[in-house]
Length: 355
Image 1 (tube, rainbow, N blue to C red):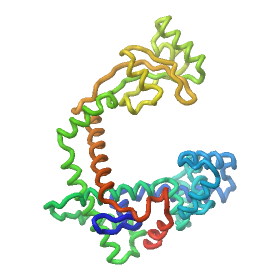
Image 2: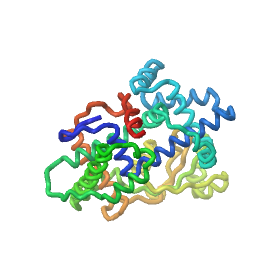
Image 3: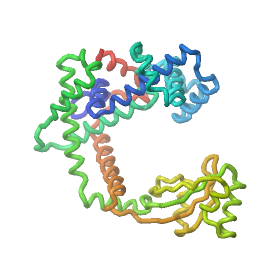
Image 4: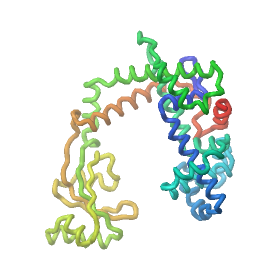
């Protein structure tokens, strides 16, 4: 996949690193749920209608700027998939959403007969973007760990390595000693990454990031009321501004529910940000069109970001780490094969290696 400081990292490393970080189990569960749903739907002939599958395919394409059928086929081919495998991924995702309350029972019913093929494994990881995400996380940790020589003790959490091997015995049982030795290297990367991450999170750095995002990270308290039509929203706004009703009064009359929200300004919907920022506390703004709905919002409070606020501090620390990782990746990672969303075809090799 890529190299850092003269060491090559392959798909097996990506998968092993995910296991060490406890990121593998959710992916495996999601894959098994999809396969169980597909098995159930086919046995009962209850596959989603073609129109829903087509809509899911269209949404997938537009999310990735694949505007034509030819572009989509090219993407699928370059990813080392087939149209059938991609379609099964879409159908499995639809069924998981439809049968949320049945997933445990479906896994129990079909789990014993499920076989995870290269095709299903690759399609789930590539089309969901999970492989991309895990490859980039590993690249970032390897790059940060290689940023500078230091005297950090070569401490590896061997107990965690042993736990990982036991927890994923079904996948790792066939690996040889050299492949399992990769786990120790990856565990050391994690330890070094944590050391360098902590070193980068200085009080001064946190304060500087908070000051830099003073507007974006303003905390906004809102009461929000949603309407299906603009006329209903305008009538409600009139009741507030001319009749002196509160948003709660309007909600009771309209048989709706006021939703309280407290968000950073930059995490509000773009349509709301400017009007809310310009409004006074206690002022009701709107109607604001957000997608297919219309909202009135009462500005309950505003507060500039405070480094002592644990949520603000967490955002600042996240930004600092992202900056650290981004700089390290740009300067130290040499990509041999871009992440799956661009070009793939070898991730199935990682699965076969673990069998």
